[in-house]
Length: 587
Image (cartoon, rainbow, N blue to C red):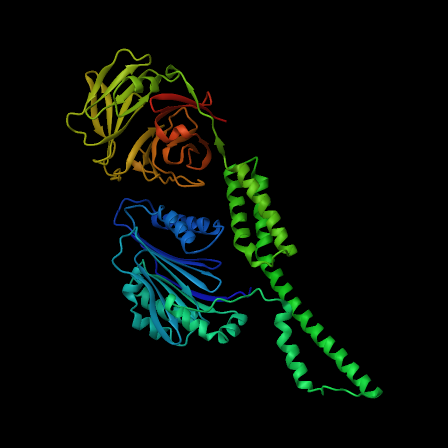
């Protein structure tokens, strides 16, 4: 299959403390992204770090797709969108070239324009779209098309008329060079654009010229069009016109009465014809072999290197090993369909891909557990959760603590000596978690975006606010846990970490799929890892204290789980599901 030739140039404004933009390209995947926030308390380079994480996620989701079409790429874009926090406004425009088809996605607001035959128009535009809304389109490309991706801020600066003027008969690099000063002088940090020139393969140009009736019929079905090509013709079909043309020019008579000299001449002519046809066959085969080797060299050596890196890291760090295997998988998946069927190069790629997939399975950390029911008394905290009414429960070495809408009560480990230790005094609005640490009791209030810290005194507990200057968003918070820092789990699957009242640079990484409807998080000062009850995916997920994925344990009872009790040193987890307690063994 002939490869299209893409040339492109980028325009990116300088970032500021509250606005950032970037242009991205990997293979035939292109994107422009801008992020804006009004918060003044974010850590340094917050938008830069977040933007790179979003683009890395897009790359991972896209290049692991087995089939790349409008719907499958849409799912990759939607998965990527989960990385964008609610307090950040984004303009995310994505396109990818699959053969001669262009797929377009706009998340939030932005624009994709097309210049064709000297005329410039908009293919897809979103002006007043919600930040999490998605527009998409697809269509066929033609030779010499120019595609322009623009963030909303770029559109605000550069009008369609200005863009048309600067694109007039100029290659992408020169057009971008001329447009860049107009962007930079406005000091709009969210402005970004990429200009992509599309050059159809030679074979596509020739066939397009011979199939104009089909082209006209298809224009009504697509916003832009270039005809689909049948590239599966045999070698003889390619050289047949040359042979027929050659014979037609000889104009030999139907009846030949040849003497010996003429027979010799005719024999020589036929030999020349055979040599000529053979040389054409050889040249075409050599051209195809050269192209195959180029494609093979662009994917196999790098994928093999990543696979070997993963193998060497297997015993040292499975997270890093898995990352290397995933990169190798992405390279091989994106390139295997470009190689001729049943060729030696395709066989090598498929053999390596099988090894990579096997290695990924070994490093996935997924354990399908046969959760067995045990006596409720096996877990003190879950037993008391069954016996007592409360929203949330937690424990320390001495007591079990229960949280209601109006109070915190304590129980001894055997369930006796129940007493109310903290009254809300109507201070609470919507409490979603309680956790003891170092003698203090912490209560998470989602509606007030606050964690109340109750310090023991001679007369009971005194109330202080954990946050004094930081203003976190806990509207989706569902649980908290404390070691020396505080970890807050949100229903979206994000985990925020705070130390001494300040937000830390922390995020979960390495997951094979996003958390879905998680309900509980657990860690403490004596526990090495972080455990999350991921009800929607029927699993318990384990991370180290840096947020890197380690392993997961799957069991059907987790779907209805209300709470869990982690005994890391004993390598056990007890799960409270549908009023019963189940046990899972940790590795």
